[in-house]
Image 1 (cartoon, helix red, strand yellow):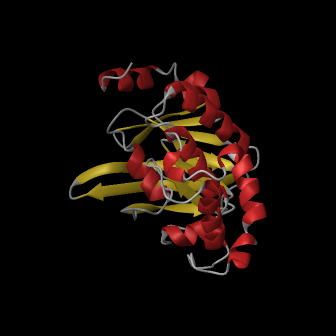
Image 2: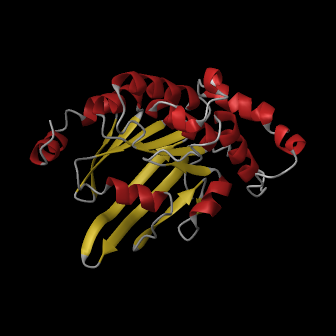
Length: 252
């Protein structure tokens, strides 16, 4: 049984692909109410590990628990209902629908309703107040009536986070939230992540080390599918093994 301060835990997590071991015996504890980053050079196994934790891949060995409950065999939809929700590296919004409509659809999902685009307008409007709250939470109120496809890349990511928040996650898993962003958007999304983390636990895979340094309470560094180091950025960034792993992989 995990400590009550540990919300997500993995033990001996392993994934093999036809003879190649991408993740090898990883132990991971994510503390409740923290921002925890999973980093490492290219080929370190971060994405595979993330896919295992979010149940988009089944492990070859090991187990995963959430709030002390074994979730190793559960599907992504089942763990989402428990409160573990993932956002993707590629923005996943309905481009021809408005910001408000995108969030409203996510609220329908959470309440178990189907995607009834043709439902009575009065029924759909019942979601509007909460949808507006989620839009405000991610700083998109002034864009609430715009179609999602017209938003800047950074604002699309903010909208995606709003749709994720509509599912009321206890834990949010972010897959490279800053990928492909201009600096202005990086600053905006960093501030957003810090704000939403006040009420939730966040685990993120992120390449931008300045973002990791700025946001993370704890960092797990993977290399060749194994945990190389763990701790606050200040300590991890000075670890000779971490420096060697990044330089050896062609990273500064």
